[in-house]
Length: 173
Image (spheres, one colour):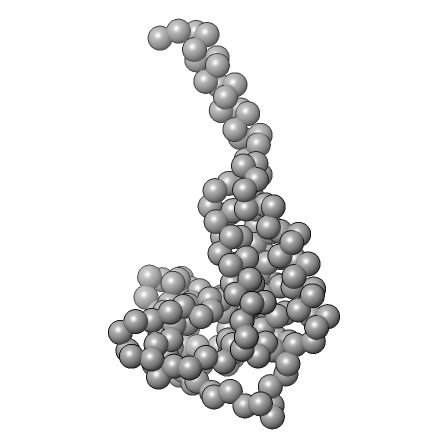
């Protein structure tokens, strides 16, 4: 449950990590919350863990963050919304569609890195033997689409820089 009395200090971006020993943690999902006072949920593949760590990577309107409540629910086969083969195949198609962008130098390194991170998350979801839910697959597809839309084409900027450098060399010191 986000902070209730202000947008400032609410969690924007987060990582959820798990551990069986409380020392060695592994990231199992990342995400971005909306700026709202409403209860928000995130879901990850069932995994064995004794410890769960919620890591805030950025906040709203400040460098500090608060969380009013944090709940972790156990996996429940009876209520789990299993992803269909069609949903998983759609995710595979998205991975294939966006994978070439990872090495396309026309996009900025930072935006390619962001897409690469989401592609890794998508690949991990596809390859896990743990159950996958429809909402997990839909969330990763939305993350992929968002990361692809955020790619910044630096072709014109690179050409303008080269042109400016050439003019500087022609003019001499």
